[in-house]
Length: 225
Image 1 (cartoon, helix red, strand yellow):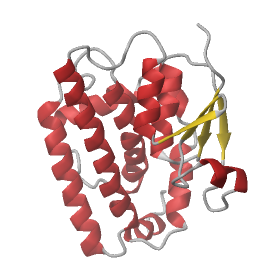
Image 2 (image 1 turned 90 degrees about the vertical axis):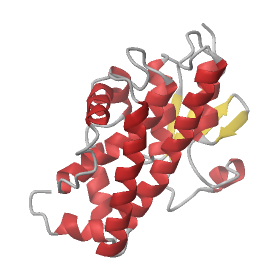
Image 3 (image 1 turned 180 degrees about the vertical axis):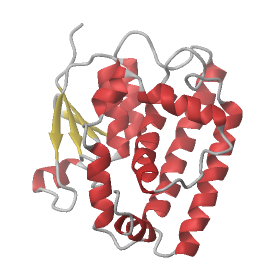
């Protein structure tokens, strides 16, 4: 199948970028990947990114932004949709994709919480979020045996927790057995394994050590990390 020239503009540790990277690999779409330094944005990037964020997907001379939109586009230009065919089921999947973005926002607070009190608040919020996910899961993937777009959206979330688990057991998945099964199934998916560099967790922990958050303090105080 012939495609437009696709270039994914990426940042190494961005979970939103990884959504698109998984889709490109899952659907075997030829593409080019360009990494940028978000702390030192080049002028060419500023000229094509309305929000100053990644991912961007360059489609020949056009540019798409926002990860959910990019993933929908990649799904639509390839055979075998990763969305359900039923309109109501498709809409439900889209709501859980949006919920995944909400989880990432809470995770950012967990990652950057300046003190133990705010850190604990975000930890509790994450537990509540995944309790909601638990109620809707079928497993091994989100909707059962078939991999869907929702799965690609949540895989980067769980990759961040690989780093968190290296620091300590924060108990976020203690009461969500189906989420734990789902997380493992995603971890074993070839497209997901290929989307993340082998040292992804190490790089994320290195970034944490450079912060001044409560989680950073926990990393620095753990000699095994």
